[in-house]
Image 1 (tube, rainbow, N blue to C red):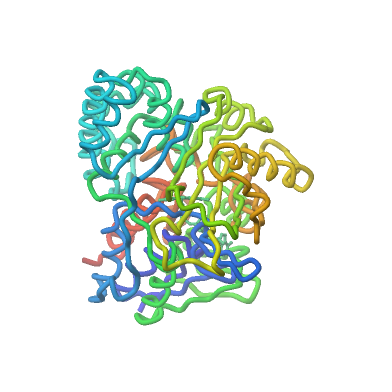
Image 2 (image 1 turned 90 degrees about the vertical axis):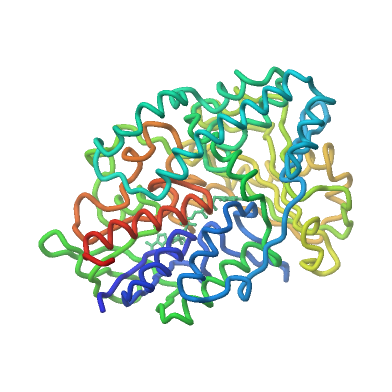
Length: 491
Ligand SMILES: Cc1cc2nc3c(=O)[nH]c(=O)nc-3n(C[C@H](O)[C@H](O)[C@H](O)COP(=O)(O)OP(=O)(O)OC[C@H]3O[C@@H](n4cnc5c(N)ncnc54)[C@H](O)[C@@H]3O)c2cc1C
């Protein structure tokens, strides 16, 4: 059996470990943290357990496949609950709009709250989203791009769907109402992109949500991670935690060994699920900008300030996923993504799992997390100094918009800043989602699923093709597996 070392246990790492084990590799996962999941790990505080990251589960078949390929029934490991509505959007004028899970009802709501023209515009937008989905998702999401030429056959269709337009511009060309445009163009933010610069290819997420629905895992996303870990143990994958890969050694352009804080591991092949920019800089010790397909300036995604908290008050009327838009939109995103300025008027995403999963209640409380997109650490903001103050800004906003008296009702709270992503999860500049989903960092131009320097070094995860988000990173494992099977001549 060939020895495969997987570095990192994010969803991408877990998925490639399942896939390689199926193909009879002897697989070992090396994870820096004390628990699996990466950005999707669980955080514990004062006896409360919180999902650290992803809470919106879409395209669930991608996770299910990892179990069925090993002749296991995924529903023996975790349970999915449908989320209704998918999202509630609250605007700075305190009006709101519910998105999903009933299309007819949503169209009716658009007619009633906005206009018949916008309702018709949305139907057209969804048709465009479906068309993009057919090419960009169904044909390309698990296809590795080895050469620039491999993108050429898709260029005519990409031109027809106007990939050069941004998601925001595409939505704006279908919808008049400004609030509705903000809401319907927010999806890039879920994968680390600015709606004003993210290629309209990512409009496909809308259709993907409608096609398969939006889910929450009973007991939290951590129950899926735990299910995958149980599966890996059952199929004989060696799972090692609290171990950080620091360097590699190689012979004849092949990695032969990875060196860790706890000793060395022989490898026939290595798959890194670590953030590639950091991995190139600190483990391979090369400048990623010197890679042939990389632009001179790599644009990394924004980071996040995430505040986890529980309250003794139960906020019955609060939906599961609420997005609150502050007054500023374009200039706020420019401050965060481009200028890397500190902000004090964030827009927020609030997660309230109790709405979908009453069985997950902890200590008779309501548990939440709220996140605010903020500049990544290229900003040089000292979060040790400003973190506490920023948490007050966030609580004040929650109090005003959605959770009255939240501060008086707190029984637990703590926050993480871009420093958590940089120092704990090794992401470059504390970026929350890897490199941004702009066209010049997509497909062939994203980090390659196979290294250009070593014959047996591969990559999975948010910065590789097709990109961030749980469905995205699980698809990176499918693309990478194809390359490995080709290289090792396995069917
Ligand atoms: C707060 C937040 C909310 C999100 N919400 C959603 C959502 O609702 N739905 C959705 O689909 N997506 C969401 N996302 C995006 C999604 O979580 C990520 O894109 C995805 O989980 C990233 O997976 P990954 O495979 O890239 O690995 P990561 O999660 O980045 O994991 C990489 C792992 O590698 C480990 N590692 C790094 N370097 C080393 C080393 N040298 N040695 C050993 N181990 C190492 C790290 O510790 C980490 O565990 C969210 C992200 C965040 C941050």
